[in-house]
Each structure stands twice: as C-alpha cells, then as structure tokens.
Amino acid sequence: MWFLRGCSSRMASSKPVRRSYWQTCRLKGDHLLVGVSSQLRHEVKGLDEIISPTDQDYPASGLKVASLIRMGMIATLPSNAILGRVGSISSLRLTRLMGNFIAAMKVT
Image (spheres, rainbow, N blue to C red):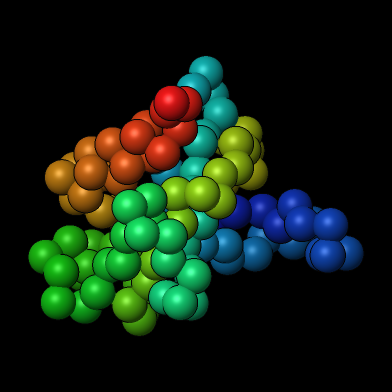
C-alpha cells in the first residue's frame, strides 16, 4: 500500500491524498500499480483476489477491512507521485496475482 499524490480529474488540489494502490513491479522509475477496494462485490473471479483479516499476510498489508485486490484496475505512476509505503502483501500472493493477470491477458 502506498500514499500517492492526488492526480484524479475530480480533485481540484494537488495535496497528498491516500489512495489504495498496490505496487506490483517497477519499470524505469515508474511504478505499475493495481487498485484495492473494500467493495468485495466487484470481484472478477480468476483475476482479482480478496485479502481478509484471517490471511497470514493481512497484518502486513496495512488494510483496515477485508479488501479486493483489483488486477483489472491498472495505473502507471512516476516515483514522485508516491509519498510513502503503507504495507505489503506476501510474495506468494503477488506471484499468484501476477499469474492471474498474465493468464487473463493471453489472447486465444
């Protein structure tokens, strides 16, 4: 989890705003991020994943409630848009999520 500078068109100021995004990999100083939401009903089976308080990596995530890691909500942001780190997920979960994403992007 990261703190990001507000860059939404709905935001009138450039004050730092907490956004729920997960860093998944780093590309030449930019960060590839995916959305995190407490709206579990939006889960896309086989792509997204719910992280719950009973999961081993939940305490390290910095989340307050069960949340949905939304692999379909992708953004690339420069390093200067990220103000700090809030939490992390396990490498096992990250690997599984990346595998889900790659499988979803394959064209048949």
